[in-house]
Length: 138
Image (cartoon, rainbow, N blue to C red; front, side, top):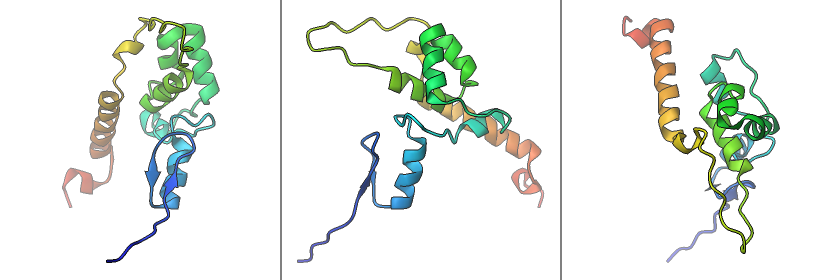
């Protein structure tokens, strides 16, 4: 019988674990629990025209104007919205009841559906505007 010892790398902000140091470093940079994250999806959503807002800006927008202002500030980027929602959530003390969730639109937020929509729009734009190998005339 053989046994192996393998080095595993884990994200400092979430529970993700992997075997590649490079991939985990890239994940940590954009992890939605990272307070100083850099959004890699924002460029796809805005076409590279907008600079991604900081997590602090997103959380301030969520506190000041609720979910509608968060959507505006994040330029409707699903990853930015998820980061603000995840990092603004605070667990109540054991003796306190759970607060009611604000009914301002965040209860309908579906990250997977919005992400699929973003990539679908991006891919259709690439097929129309991109090189000929996307259109099949090669």
